[in-house]
Image (cartoon, each protein chain N blue to C red):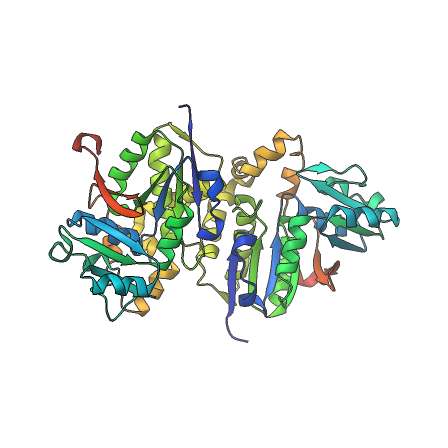
Length: 246
Length: 246
């Protein structure tokens, strides 16, 4: 194919499914869902089943699954853990299928269901992700989960970081103002990522709930080479050959 | 009142009317609607009636009004002019009520109808607007019109420019990531505004239609001291006393 298009979407409220049916859609929700998913696969999870509602998650729990379920940052009482990446330890997840209750995430996966492929992005898997995206030879949409349908800075700068690497290959072009804004914001953030993240609204929300211990970790590039993708509604993990990951 | 809140909304698709019922909402659509409205009032327009659809605009035309009406940049055949600021000359608008057909703008005005006040913002009236906002002693929402519900850079950097001036007063605070992003993007754009605007998607769209002649003008700060506000569904113009405009 010729030049591939790169677009960025700042919120589920801005996603246009019809425009992206042939694209690879990268879901970005770094504080904390997509960072947790990358961590789970690095620690050996076999697969992750995203479910939308709490009763469904509970039913899986009753059937013996490990269940991650929280609302507004708090672990639900029946669940094994919430969505901090630190919960998804090797001890808990290795070789297992994890059920992950996420209203927002499930909605986004459904929205993007006409995409060519859906993949999970974060700083934790950025280099492997970028190599894999390039190997797909497809248009790419960076889909920021936002927060309650709102724009957020942390997902945007992660989108900017991914966009920068894709644009450097000269394989992609963009006429999308959101991508340009994400690139610009990333250019401001990258020299002091942890300093920049201090000002994002969700940093304050997590801190107020005592849930901000994982933020530094979520900013760590290349903790894993795993590439979580959706197959038949379930998250499984691909790994790029070592040679392909820079 | 205590500290006033400042928020920014990047697109009609992201606007949450219930949150902003007590706020002043600033509508920003600098290429070209809000720049054209500011120009019309500077050139003596008495008032501007925003209408949503073409048949309604046509009916006004039949009743003898001056009508501005275009779709996708092209002037409709029955209309007196489109929405380039250069169309709203003193000769055409002085002392008159203009009917302005704008699907997007009318929808936005309707969305924001529970606001304390709705005001029109652009670079052309930025200093007067900021002085007036400060005088209102209210929370402020900077509402970027975007383009077909999408994020756009030009309205965002104008929002950032307004936000910077409001934040400098120390009367306002923000926990809104969109405002922080707008401020950051403005910080990148302001040293070479015309250079920055070269890369925005709408610049290309207007250029392709030969409609980009007004872009430099739309970036001009303080062409006017007029402050267009909505009163009973119609745009009228306030003027700040000279002493209050820096």
